Amino acid sequence: MKKAGILFTMIAMVAAFASCDKADDSKVSQFDENATRDLIMAEDLFAEVKDISDDAYSNQEGLKSSMSAYLGPCAEITFENQDTLFVLTVDFGDENCLCNDGRERRGRIISTYNGAYWQEGTVITHVTEDYFVNNNEVIVTKTVTNQGADNNGFPTFTIEEEGSIVLDDTGDTITRTAIRERKWVEGYNTFRRLDDVYHITGNASGIDRRGRSYEAETLSPLRREVTCHHFVSGVRTRTLEGLPTRTLDYGDGECDNVATLTINGQDYTITLP
Figure 1 (cartoon, rainbow, N blue to C red):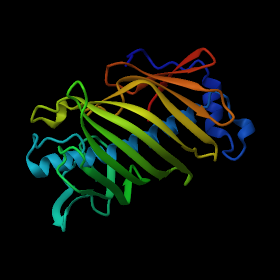
Figure 2 (figure 1 turned 180 degrees about the horizontal axis):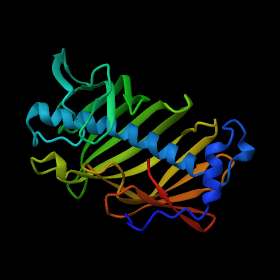
Figure 3 (figure 1 turned 135 degrees about the vertical axis):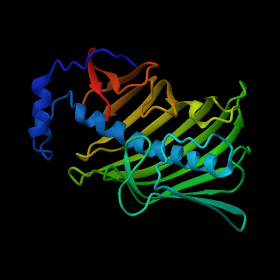
Figure 4 (figure 1 turned 90 degrees about the vertical axis):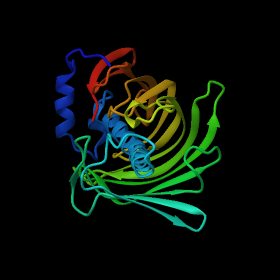
């Protein structure tokens, strides 16, 4: 991503966002950076549920290096057989735990496998239980299906997810439903978890904290590197009820928290949550 200084040409608008009454949509600028940040946060918190489970699976099975991008010292991993299923539980405890990525977590992620992770046709279901990230409650069910290798030999997974985020700062709720394809384009043939890279495509929809519906569509694959909080490249559009369609460009491949938001042909540099 671009390392240019973070410039907000509409500082007055941004200041107005912080003071406006969230129930009065007439006071919301068409720029509405906060809405974009909320939807990005929801996507990231949903995505990392699978990433955390994958970290735990790799550590439990000894398939990769024991180093983890997410798991902290308080995370307890259990892996057990239940009839024809395998159940993996990552338990962060009932109090906030500072994890390797600098985020505080508590609660549990429970993942159920009907076959080996690498096996074509395996279906993995991830659910959260009293799970919080930086005091935002994450309620999600994700179903991941191993589709085998594509024509380039990349392991490919389809992901269906549905759930909500209850925001700590206001108590408002963001909902999200998505269907995505995730290609494992780097690191799948090594024994190091931290070199894994994925390309993600697909669509999403839901309701934002103000009760407005939204839709998101991927224009070019979003590149996710396990060691980075955010996508490092890729482009998508977001259409939010009552606001112009905006395009979000995650940059040129650098790991940072900067992206370019384009609305009505005007570019804005924003910080990602």
